Image 1 (tube, rainbow, N blue to C red):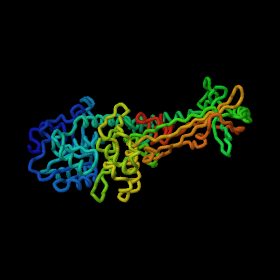
Image 2 (image 1 turned 180 degrees about the horizontal axis):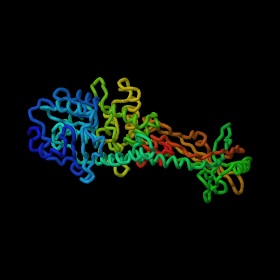
Image 3 (image 1 turned 30 degrees about the horizontal axis):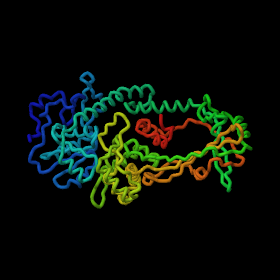
Image 4 (image 1 turned 120 degrees about the horizontal axis):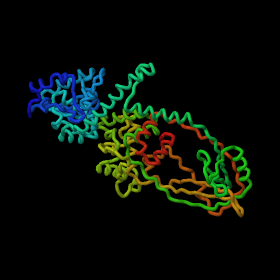
Length: 548
């Protein structure tokens, strides 16, 4: 393996175009590393140990314990190089080529890494995404290593077996991922650097900023607020009846149709529908309904199946943590990062979940089989479907670079690791574990019954409708729980027989006012960005007002 020292000719050739790798790096989006290959060099042979670079100290500690002697694991503390703070740093006339410089607060970090790298093999073990690839590219070049050499190790869970296997199979840094990250960074700079000063000048305020993402998000919030302000509250009325079934039992039901016209509770009038727009209409109809006898004319019971949701992606994890745990998106990701980077258990340090930044619901066959074994052991064979559930990504443009978020070992139940976790870590791990296990369980089964009642007479005018669902097999709900789902009691509905006659109905009109509802801004942004991933059931669980 050749020396990693830089040839004198290469240094002269690049003088004047760069300040040197110690301070500045320059690249074009097309090539990202258009410098001669011998500028960076390669690691020297004969080193007795290996330097492994990761982003965070917590991750470094976990991997150090897994790799043991012969390896030194150090943290870069995030990005070590970036575009300059006080200038654009993008040469628009030269194919938008960026100029990078070592961040001021990272110069001691880079110097420490340089000293640690002397005489050692270098491995880059940053996160398996664009940002991680870019960090690795900068670190390799700043330390004098060639990114084209096999020095990048990639893993999607931090467990001893997976980390050791990855270390034995390094690859070159993926230049396509580096280019993608640089393109996004350049776009951020072109938008923010040019527009932010104009905003501050226009509004005569300091520290106003614009950005590729934040400006779009702000527009979504403004448009939503304008819709709320423009919305005019609308009054509408419904009519609820209570029917005597005998033996001191009653059946609540809602007015469904009047002379074949279905009651309309939507906004405004609708052709062929009956809309009770004011109290006078509702009260008049209530008086007509009272004093009549009603007959049950139809009882229909159907079995309804509800399939489990897929394992978490980043966005669905944030949504579930918000609705079930009350966590913000940023808090959820901070906790997930700790669970991913490693927790000290009696058997050693281990990451409890797979990589938490993913848009895929894909799961490895080994993890699926492990989940099936856990389901059979904990819940019983009746909760296990005939074969594994294989979920497919519904959203177009899914990168599918990483698996879904799941436990690294599903046999580690939440209760078995609870005493090693903080309360918030336990609650999030419990959520992830239950979601993954539930995704491999059988459907929940309901008996859904609908009852129609009509007034007696030659020409019945009024139709009331009652419905209810009775859960008869929990299926995946045994692990996932019902959350905010509301299941109608349905007990009285189920026992009614067709042609049963009820006594005089009690009826009351109820006023409703449709108002514009204001969603939590954090949840609104998350849902707006990813609602195409959700099933209709998941959208309803979040609340219709949360979706644009």
